[in-house]
Length: 397
Image (cartoon, rainbow, N blue to C red; front, side):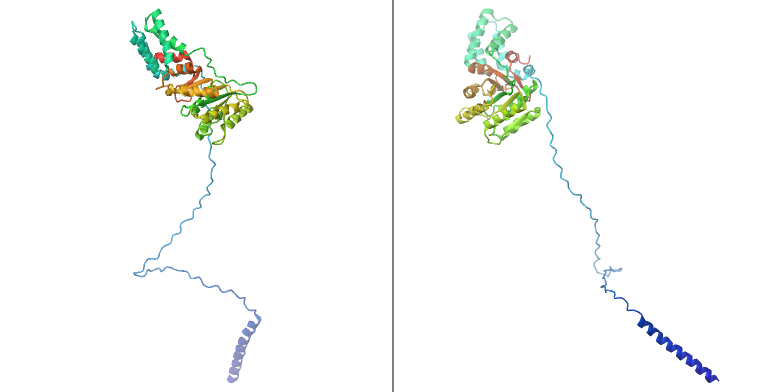
């Protein structure tokens, strides 16, 4: 009986084992094959050793700096500052206000003459001293002879009394020598449909372009309107200079190419003045040497071309007072070419000799209309004979 039970148990164990072998094989056949996964090569990452080997250099430590983005550079357009438009002072009374500057040259004509004329009795040597003083002041020989002769007659009839009386006699004679009856007004009023035209001429170095700018300030200070014509095309700085003078007072400047035809620029300036309705067109011409016939002929051409619009109202000759009698020859040649109507004497302050005013007028018969008494923009004044002589005689008194 025991053998039967053992056989049965052995049989059961064999059956169970056979089933365990068959079932897993059947399951493997039924399952689908797994999907293929692409093989990625392993990334080798350098890991610094935790423990440094003796004698080995330390591993470099790389520190990455943060990237700072630079903002794009935006180019700003340059800001062009407009010049401040100035309001020049009126011309009335300018000569009186500038009296102190004019009086710097009084030592030649002023106290020296008064001291001689105030002597109780004037000998021939005294009159010779007076003549020398007047000639040294650039009055000129002919004008000096006339003035001295008239003074001698006064002294003979009236006698020399007080210094005040002698002063009045001297002032009267010098004023008379300046021909106070000459017309010194500037013809700058506009005509019907066109402006007045003023030509400014002179040699190089006399301050012509600067004087042209100052004349514009005089006219604007008196309530007029002005347009500048930069007809000095041979000197680029002259056109820039006159344009700067215009910008300061709000006046337009007509200019042409460097080296261009001056007559063409002058013609265009007058045409522009007609179109804009200004009162006066001031034309700055190139400096001319009186011995250069071709250049003087060209100046005559400028005037002829401008006169296609109408006659030129004023031709002002700028003379440097420090040139003395040499300026008279310059003036004479200019009058033959362009018919000068008035003289502007510059640099009468300081070293200048005021007697040149008398010499210019007597020699040429042309009135001095404006005088320059300094480097300031408003140091140009209408010429007033009596105020001028009083400043020369009295000095700072």
